[in-house]
Image (spheres, rainbow, N blue to C red):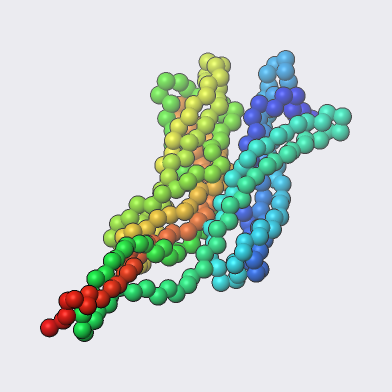
Length: 274
């Protein structure tokens, strides 16, 4: 007999974008929301259970100027999730609110003046400095990450639930020949010790993805998020947990080119060039 969720203790949702199509001035986004519940199935005994299910979604976003030549960055964020159980119909009702931020980039050519002269008079010029961003690469990669957490103060008899934040902002570390996209994922564990006591702990897992730096650009920034698709744990040697995560990196790497340009130029007619 399937366990009935008499009381929902915790609910999580992970948004995974599967496909993006571009038409003029519009972006069509298709994805899946993976929902995970932790609930009490028997109020008298306190027995718990978990349930996972998926919800598909399609969304059209209006972006003026976007076309098939555009490069883009799409970041989904979970707003809220509400889950109720209808015992009369044995249905789980799920209401999810999410935010999808989409930014599109088009390469354009710009002309600027960086030098001027006069063969007759001395010139008085004013200059300024700015940075021109350009997209170096787009990141869309799914990989597995394995790590181990040791609990020195207790032995573990069972893992009731294990989860992670669904979306983690990443940053970029640059060297001469490569750069690494890295971040820190908080892991949450609800378990039971061998003494029957329920415990909750939070640990951080560092992740890093090395990427070859073909342009050798020094001034780079990243708009990359790690979506934690799934998290599981296995007890090792009684007091350690082996953690396995499926992670999807999505975003772009930007490089900045510094330029100096002239904002104004005037000739000094009182100062004649010899």
